[in-house]
Image 1 (cartoon, rainbow, N blue to C red):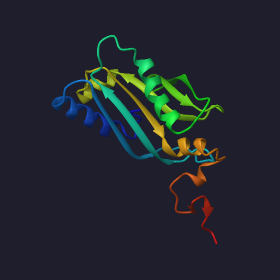
Image 2: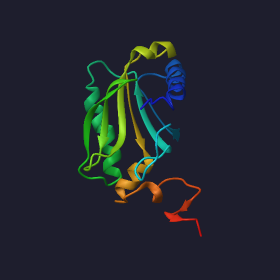
Image 3: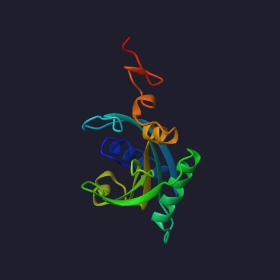
Length: 164
């Protein structure tokens, strides 16, 4: 969660909701994300992200266990079996946790804070968040070999090529 493409928007929500609401604060956001990376059958430059964030957590909460609980609910609801949570190093967020399918495909990435960069946004509370790539989640749930049938597209409709 809080990837570079959505971080300013989420930080704005965290700051404003933190000013108005009692803790803990839980919210979600669904929106398009863009990455300047190569595209492939399993990787899109644009995708849809579901972010789930909790802020102002109680003292002593096991944040990793809470992320496992939240992520597990989404993956179980999607009917994905044999998923796992793995540690991953991030240049921006330090240690992150990725949710992957049985083949190792990343379905979600999770982070915990506060992080050193949070103070610049006015965020001082403990928080956790997980961001799911909905196209990959759907691709895995439907056992599709590539994103074409699950991604938004101007060249495919329901996975069928529009080049007639």
